[in-house]
Length: 430
Image (cartoon, rainbow, N blue to C red; front, top):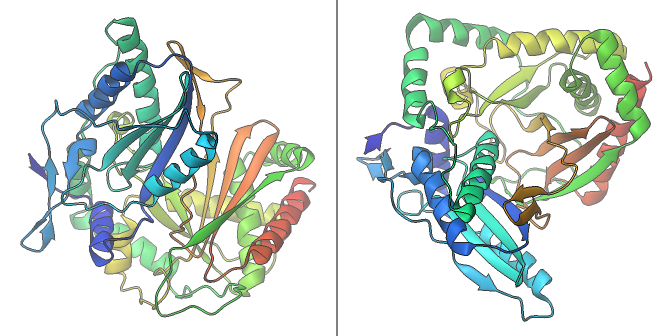
């Protein structure tokens, strides 16, 4: 079966075509499986997940110079190669190395299976399950769907029963057809007019305090810095969010925008904010690449006090989300955004707040206890600087900074993180 690509998929296809060895858009998940594992049941469960979701069976060959989406028929088993490290004294370290190798393997979008699984045995009753996929077929929302379905299916397979799992309400092809209809005629003209006015005069490149100048080519090599926000600061932020009737997203984004404004001495810095892109209810349980990037711009050059700044950012966020249907790549193209060597067009920094489910303990899949495998690290970044806030519990928030190592030293990332934490404390105490 042949289908159409969404505009965001077309961009990823083109980027991979330009650099076939690129791995910025590899997505890797890792899980520790403790207990008696039924490998055959796990294989069948993986195959059923791919049967349920067309996106995981799609490849993207070139036809007359343009990408096409070829969907393989269901029923094809998913390979699950097993690497046995149980007899090695350094098995855990070898597993971490193997994980890094799997994360760094590029995809041939035209030929490769874009959903891969690997199993590592550390002991007879301890395994690591790695799930690798290219972003062109799955976003982070999709990974939660895959994990939940895989658990339900494995539990049923291991017990020898039927899984009570309804079919997805829509296929990814339904989304691409809906999006093509949405992005046509007067509606598209109105959306583009809004963004043209909103982004008029925005700096093409944000002046960041980098340790080295940009080169002519953008390097994807990245590093991460994870820092917890003190519990008292988190409590203060949640209290203020309640008083102002705003979200934690708006509060923490305000601190980031204030910081960007002070760093760059530029009013109206543009920040990439991801949105789920699942506007219709039937898309909620479909695996695919739905996420879109909204270029959020708020002028805080007058250095307002925290509360007025929060109000200004909140209004800007609501307005932007009312116009989030235009794919970022189409927006850049239609608005004629200038291209600068060595950096992304229009946005070089990103922000998101991720409500990460707090688990009191491991998830159970029949006789298995399943926990996250924390050795997964992609070591790449798609922007110069990304800030991810991990909101996992009432009194627990962590900041995860991802930065280009050709631009920033680790010490600079630590300094920026400390400055941001100070701003959060200032806002939370207001």
